[in-house]
Length: 535
Image 1 (tube, one colour):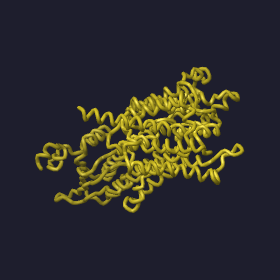
Image 2 (image 1 turned 90 degrees about the vertical axis):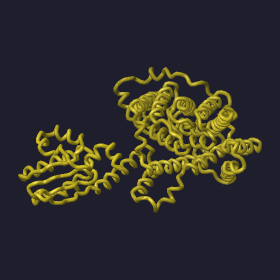
Image 3 (image 1 turned 180 degrees about the vertical axis):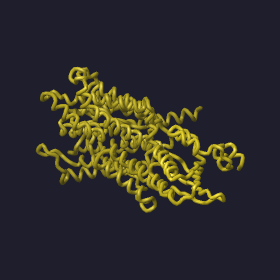
Image 4 (image 1 turned 60 degrees about the horizontal axis):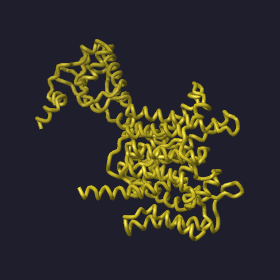
């Protein structure tokens, strides 16, 4: 009992410290994504707080961090711009259309959870997973490079001279602390210590560097200071709830829901591998959907799981729901009480943390296996990585799954075989081996020589698997061809479900399919218990 309490206490300490680290890292990300979407920074911060809190409590993956993300923000840009164009100048109608879209997005995600669609993430091939991880690491890296720009004459330009060298030095110091501290002691959260040390150097050294506060002001924001999120009654006053509105927001809601679930469930899988535990994908769908509904109603921009912050949390020791709850509540505390302190945190410290996340996220093992995996898998890996960077996660993953499925279908189609022999009575037997489905139909048909075959034909399917309607149609057409040629054909060892479908399609199959089978192989295949006893 004492050991159990000690372990729980240790975990609680790690969860609290990792939650504080994540909260600091969430601030510039939420603000940056809000600017990308074209909304106020508080809209992004509120989303990070509400989504982070709700998914931490009710989600299917303890230790996973959710909030406002860039993958969703890039889709929201067009939505907000078109919504603003529908109203008068300064009305910010696009913001309220965004809230309505986020609510609909949440409903779609909850429906995915209700219908248990989360399990389909298990169908994502490993090359797609590796491509997703590599692509996302590159996206995070590119997003951080923008932090090396400064506002000059109303325009963002690359830093030069001493400012650039100072920025690089502080980023390097942050990374050095995060790399070296665990080698000395693993009891301290390296990311949090690095942020505190670099912040102290900047504040007490009075260094002229970009901070969270200057980052917000350069983007047109007024600061972090805000109150508690409030219910957005204006959604119902400003957004007409009619068919035209639904036609406008539904495509955006569907895309956002798909991107949000794909990123969340793939992050869930990644954390499962890192922690050697198992999350609940359907529960995560419900939690993400519920969180987005609440966020839309209370003035947030919506969001999903964040792989960067999730990895920061896991590597800092966060394992339970407590870490996510602490991160969300700390973020709210920053907004309410500590905005002045957080605005003094140098951007360089947070960039250094994210660079270490990039290094930890990228699947470096993918370079070692380049010459060891099939070329098609290598193509899928590179394709998904590239599409994640060029377009977005949803397009990348869906494309990768489609290409993988087509490759699998093509390879499986080549495995159909037909052994042929003649019985003593002159009957020609075709023993079919391999999967019979839409991809292998042509090869299956090529195995038969209807014109030159003898009068009696027997097709044996004991080593074949009838997989789809195309296969049933191919069998139907084969029988028809032999009947037109005036020849007798018998089908043996068809599965029960296949026979039922053929009987429904035509009564002639009653005479074509052989039911009475006297074959020990067939009885063993049909009766697993008999097969076990025979071993």
